[in-house]
Amino acid sequence: MPESQPRIDPVLGTTVHIVGGRQSRPNLPDNRSATVCPFCVGGLEAPAPYETRWFVNRWPAMDGDRCEVILYSPDHDASFASLGVDGIGRVIDLWTERTETLGARDDVDFVLVFENRGASIGATISHPHGQIYAYDHVPQRSARLLGPNGWAPTADERLVVVGNDTMTAAVPLAPVYPVAVTIAPRLRVGRLNELGGTARRDLASILADVLDRLDRLHGEPIPYMLWVNQRPFTAGFEDAWLNIEIVSPWRAANLPRYIAAAEIGAGEYFNPVVPEDLVVRLRELRD
Image 1 (cartoon, rainbow, N blue to C red):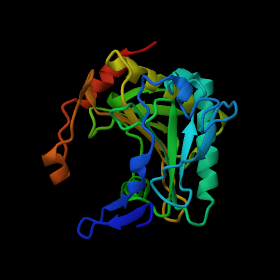
Image 2: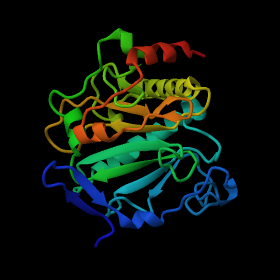
Image 3: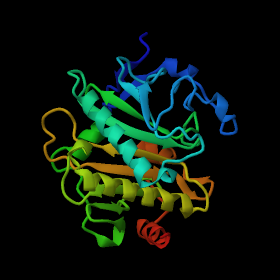
Image 4: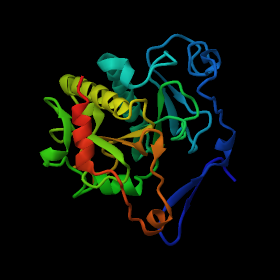
């Protein structure tokens, strides 16, 4: 069996990548000394000083150099939010460069930038980092979200948490997860490389703001998943609207909402957190 083997469910059409080789990837606990962290300067993946850095994942979920790791900072104890506007801006610049470089390959149709923060989410190394997957197809959810009649920012001001001149952050109307915020440009933009200098800095600013509010929502750093939805590198997605989704399973401090059998089995979800209540709480967490 190859290291990564995609399979299609014959009834539901779900794509599942069988990746047995990832069982051997490293898993460093949060209390491990930073001196053994492979992402710290001098470590296995960062032999020289850096501000941001990318490299091909040694334990990829897909073959063909399709999986990369993005290091946000050499500071082992930093978080994405703590990098501030300038630091987050450097990460966005690297996201943009790697998206366009990978997307230029003939065998890449879609590039997904994402971060898993927190051991409970599945992050195996606590050093601040994210990842990029380059697909040879457009995944079903991405195709639905970014295709014709796909996602566009809500006009419901009741759901807006914060905004600036070019960006807004809002809670979705019907989120699956208890905590969910979507960041998007006010005007339609397909990919990160289409953002001008002002808009890119506004994106860094609103990311710093939202991530800081999320970390204060329950009085301690929150586990979250973050991903960037961008226009695919194939025809049929001319109307795609760039957006960044951030979700967390926490419905209270250290109390996750588990997605249970009825939800997975039926494909319908039951969220105990009212989106309008979450908006109010996040709005109150100003500096």
